[in-house]
Image 1 (cartoon, rainbow, N blue to C red):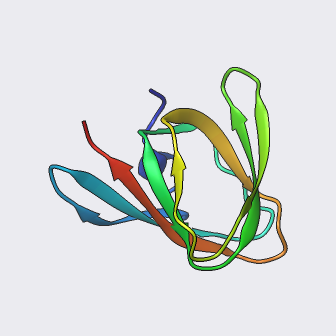
Image 2 (cartoon, rainbow, N blue to C red; image 1 turned 30 degrees about the vertical axis):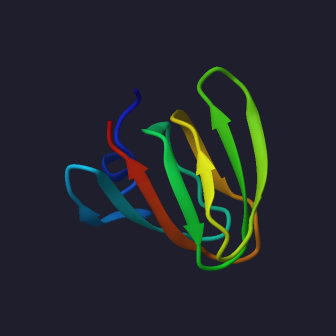
Length: 99
């Protein structure tokens, strides 16, 4: 797995809770912001505001996603970059699942 998201982009990802079962990250990402490559285990994402992102995986695959506000989404483990392609700030929580 690639470098930890919090180490790669501490201005975007902040740990708000961690125990032996989960780690919860608060995400705040300005429009047009882009991260370097980082990794996440499988997670549940809950955005507080709707937004648009582009995920570019290390294998070359790119995925554009609409992130609806308030709707939990499951995302499998991945190494990628993230770019906020929307007009507003992305703000939400990532609940990373621990094995």
